[in-house]
Image (cartoon, rainbow, N blue to C red; front, side):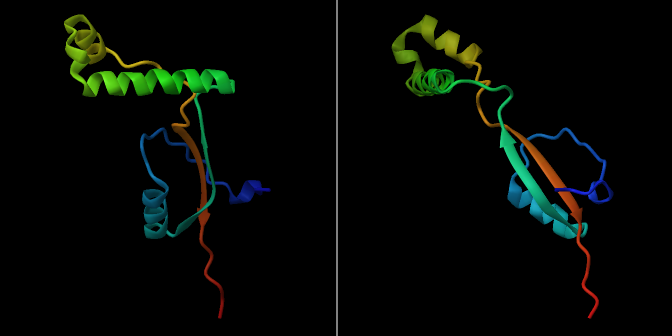
Length: 103
């Protein structure tokens, strides 16, 4: 469990950092990742996740197929993608300073 003295209280709202980039940044500033979690915007059932995944797969297929030659369908997919609240596109990262060993 984390001790309060170990926690750096700096909360940042950033988008699309990979663990590789976070490790690189941490190394440059003398910190290490001690916890990393990915999670979705809200909890959902397996059925809900499957439904959203299927909607998004159909959307990608329709976009790549140019709306299957149907102008109204092409316009619709060009304007708006389906919502995907169950996607695990949020993350929580805790870093702490690396302590050099005396020796």
